[in-house]
Image (cartoon, rainbow, N blue to C red; front, side, top):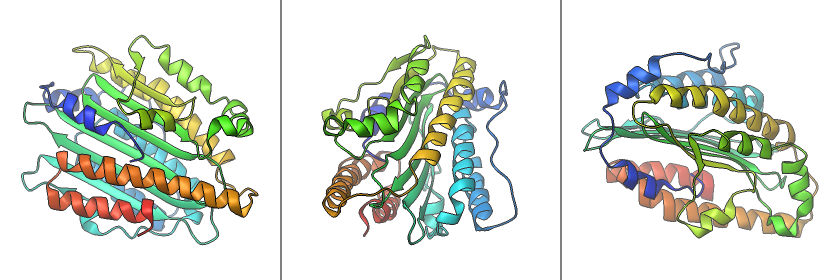
Length: 319
């Protein structure tokens, strides 16, 4: 939902791909135990988790969705007391095209007053393609407010077939890094973030993903995992192994770094805070107006896209 390469990926994935029953069959095989979603007493948080899981369960089963669900649950177990209940309307919490070939679910939760959390966003999209196959997108974003300069957390997984996956995983910087080497040292060097990029890029099926947008390329941190996983025809099991193995491990550790080091308030001058908040808003405006508004109608009917974009815009742009 932050600047991401959805447009070229939707175009690329519109080519014929393997049938959905192949995706489903591959996803039902279990070679690795998935991350565990935290359990506890019945609460508003548990109800939200259950509602989210129910909506996602109506989509074809995929390993990357299991990993994302588990991460969302782990984060909610830590952040729950700092989050207000979801106010997303029912027709945004779960929606589908009239023909039933596209399903989606979006949930937004604001931070409680005094928290460093601005909002959390989960988005789950599935769209069957006319030529066969499907595109499946899962997004998890934790956005901070002006009480801290710490990075946002962003993870987006875009699957265009049973053997291909684009991975976007980053602690999304909120400072212009060449001007703030101390920021790089604090949030990226001291936390060992670059190890995750290196470990994934060493896999033979993985290559760096290069966005066609120069603006998008300039926004990621130097340790961002921005990769294209291509396992080859008939090798869905290999993709599952990567997703449940190295990708799940790296994503869990990156989230752990963010939860431990990035969700607390820090001291800033008023001028620094105003500049940072303005920078956040500029990036958010670009994302919602030029990326999300342009690309979601490629997956859903215009009326559905309009109300989903409007709800997401409330979170990113504050309207």
